Amino acid sequence: MADHPPEALGPLLRAARARLEAAAVDSPELDARLIVEHFSGTTRTQAIADPMRPVDAVAIAAIDAALKRRISCEPVHRILGYREFYGLRLSLSPETLEPRPDTETLIEAVLPFARATAAREGVCRILDLGTGTGAIALALLSVLPEATATGVDLSEDALATASRNAEQLGFASRFKTLRSDWFAKVSGRYHVIAANPPYIPSRDIENLQDEVRDFDPPLALDGGVDGLGPYRIIAADAAGFLEAEGRIAVEFGHTQRSEVTAIFSGAGYRLAGAFSDLGGNDRVLVFEL
Image (cartoon, rainbow, N blue to C red; front, top):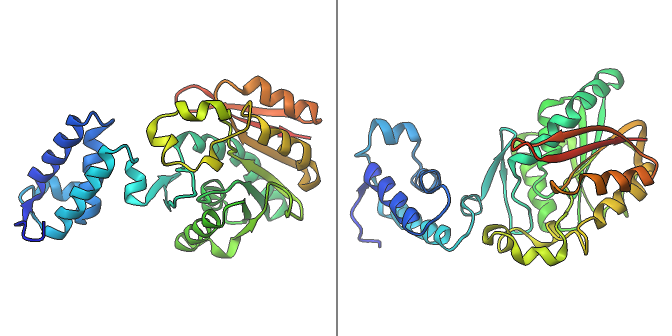
């Protein structure tokens, strides 16, 4: 591959798309563009304005390797090493869940309350349980200059990734991480407790898409026998860490609304809001004491 002559950007894009189409990859055009742009250091504008722009052999080799990974079902954002979430570029790592657009529903769900709290109190303290990349906490910090957040995770790898993301985004002074099994090591009280916990029943893991089953960390997917284990823990223990007027926001699987509501109601919470994702599926519930 090292002796490969420079190729032009336009033909390279077309060839990449054709390879992904031939392998029946989902969204071959978008994935080909993301891979070629990333590894060649070019932009979409350059591909349109200057399709005969040469691409060097090193980039071509990297593109070839990335296309092979995509054809073997590795998600495109894992290959790139980052994913956009709520307008933020977040680095990924093997032990972090890839943040999904559906989770942006949770940000929108708690934002009015968090804004009002920050305006009234001059601060809004956020606890992000199972923080992963830090997506939820960092998205809220990005729009709430008065907010501070603690990201909790059991994985050291995830916490290191979340810290790096906070640093890169300029939020390190307002974000800290804590290695804890849910609330075990948590202290203090928070205005917002947010979580996108694992909610897939153990028996269903093997039926997930290859991209999810083989590349998202099992710890971030497996919600126990019925997929509801983490909600029981959060509902049972959160009251000791919630400010008097605080809110808990949880993401859940689109068939789990009534069960999650019942778990929190049984623990003494009232439903303060229910929100659907972009596809119209039940996705986020907000509770108050």
